Length: 479
Figure 1 (tube, rainbow, N blue to C red):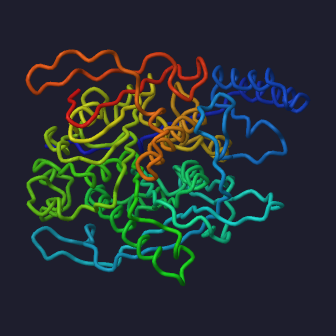
Figure 2 (cartoon, rainbow, N blue to C red):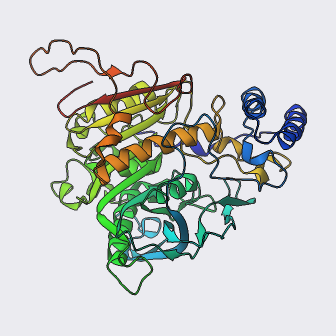
């Protein structure tokens, strides 16, 4: 039996200590008096490492809390926001004839329903230069009883910038549970660099609508493909604000945890028959449409997906795939994971995916000593930290790494990956292709082993890539 369990939603109480509060207040005063001083900022960062995440955006009294757009002084070269101002809108998309997994009985005909997906869309926009109002989001948190107010740079309902033509599409898919704001930091960041980014609220998988796991197992790949199709249609509708703005022929997908599960399937790795028949799988072998043994599986894939960014993709450790299934992936894929991730597994999980997808160009970024929350989750909302128990905080935090640093690193590599493969910017490969030793002689069809990066990673100043390892393999190379 497959143990389909995503422990990312198990959390424990976290409290803000009195020491951290006192140090934060002290350093706030220092920074207020010497706001442009490099040493004051260094003290803030050092304190964050000592007593927990303390970001620059939350230490100055007049700065709103819960900033999703903070860029640390030691962030890599491509982490900062780009040249475009950003707009944001919320829309609802409905798939009129989706199988209703929760109401379909074993042995009975599938029940169909209109499956609604609420999405957040960020896009390059026309914003007056004197417009300084911060973007604001009202987001349900991992503790559904707490709603957080987030602040970023996108302006609600801003006029789309169509002067530069259409922009590649990037779909963002959260974990189980999650919501469309969990990776809002990346959605804004990439939109500022000339992409239309759309982040999905996956019905039955959100913090305030978490239903039986079978629904997520069946729907996640379908949700991603459906959103690509609807965004492509809206991009051709001149009556819609997205008309002329979206180039869905060049689509990238960012998938975190269960979002990565859906992405890996949509890239061409069919599920195992063992997964189809698992006790927690949907009834009536519904999962077979995503299975490698289904002769029509590959016909259902969307060829517009030109690049994948898989963040701690779930499923290998649980038996969702056989390793040979990854030979079906031919799309360039960037894998990001912490080597202490016991939810998806490292050596027996994501590294197996990376090594086995030998028909694709692929990259593996490892956050040393990080767990399942490496890279993707935004910083823990202040409303959770200020609550009596701090329940839900663990969902966003890593015991070792600062959230903002993780987010900045992820933005850097996502920028390089999507600019390279969706926009054809060859200069971005300087940040992706690691320097290699002379390859060892091959024996038969076995290629030289993967080589890790040597020296500072490109785009990182000395010492700022500590704890990161970047690897790459070309098509035909087996790790």
